[in-house]
Image 1 (cartoon, one colour):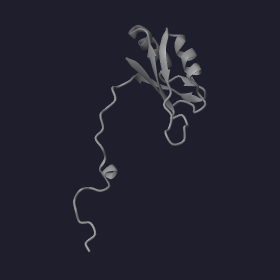
Image 2 (image 1 turned 180 degrees about the vertical axis):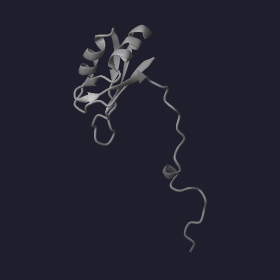
Image 3 (image 1 turned 90 degrees about the vertical axis):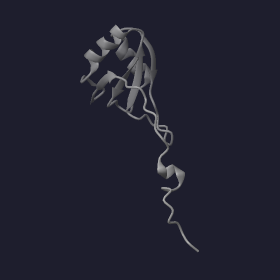
Image 4 (image 1 turned 90 degrees about the horizontal axis):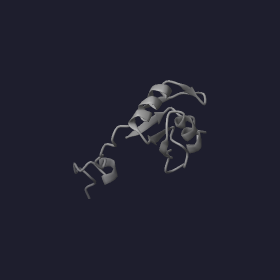
Length: 101
């Protein structure tokens, strides 16, 4: 299971997060998603720890804590939801009514 960490400073690094979470146990991985277009950090991360007990301690200790000028939001990550393609990506809403010549 992984931990969702939200409301992060845009200056945070994977090493910063790893050090903060290591206070609660062994960290397996840290992922900082970035915006595809700008390459800028998106303000949230996912941290995986080696045990559920360590994850629970980290969530309890860090949720709502002030860190790097922000109040963290820390909780169990939910599974990613499957998204169907939006109608806009199809190039229309498929209702007809286009130009008539």
